[in-house]
Image (cartoon, rainbow, N blue to C red; front, side, top):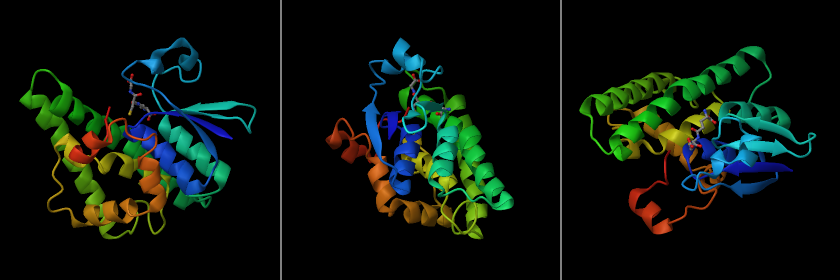
Length: 219
Ligand SMILES: N[C@@H](CCC(=O)N[C@@H](CS)C(=O)NCC(=O)O)C(=O)O
């Protein structure tokens, strides 16, 4: 059994979506980010970085994994799903997973901070991060023009990682006008029952608020 430490944010959804897609049984351990449970000493022993997500694999000597990209690779290898073993195909998936981890995630995270949460609106910072996210979306648009999924013809952990963030594009104030392939791909993943289930784990704290904004709390 996998124990999943998570919260209703994009980095958390990556893992609940993957667990749902891979049909791996898991026990949910939601953390309250606003109560700073992720900084408590007991949790720092699991994730020294004090952030969600993290997992403990109780079927593998209580092996702990933190960092969402590393967790996705671990789960894909454990289940034998959504990460090819053929070296070139595998590398393509890992390239797009790294693109998410090093690009989309940090840039959308900063766009959210400056566009949504910062007490002072700093146009330079808002524009800088929104422009970079839009540029990354355009990179994906080109890739998706010739590929059904982001790393080729098959759905992979890279799609799960990217979709968890990109489905919340409007919260970051990013426009997707003129990106038909990106929209096609968002719908393709968004209609998967396991992706829908995973994006609602843990269940949103205030369903009315979520319905209004179409998203949950993005950190
Ligand atoms: N690189 C990390 C980032 C994790 C991360 O930023 N998690 C956010 C939620 S999306 C978090 O725990 N924020 C609370 C905090 O920073 O204290 C990963 O991909 O796992």
